[in-house]
Image (cartoon, rainbow, N blue to C red; front, side, top):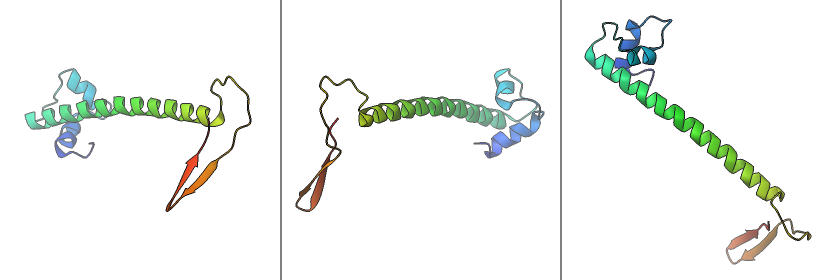
Length: 102
């Protein structure tokens, strides 16, 4: 996104010490063309959406990984304590089935 031609064109108008997207939100166009301004707004909007999605998917991945690890390690509530088989592998013709009890 940072390499988009219109976005780069708009970014060249904005002083280096300022954030491009914040300047657009404030209504400062810095003399850029309408095309550059609209494309820069589009890139900023897309960037914000992708940033939110990154955090949502990261959180989901961490939760799923933790839940999976808890299940595999047997940290879930179990009513009976009994020895567990580590892995049951059974051949089925041309395929192999594997069962992991939890």
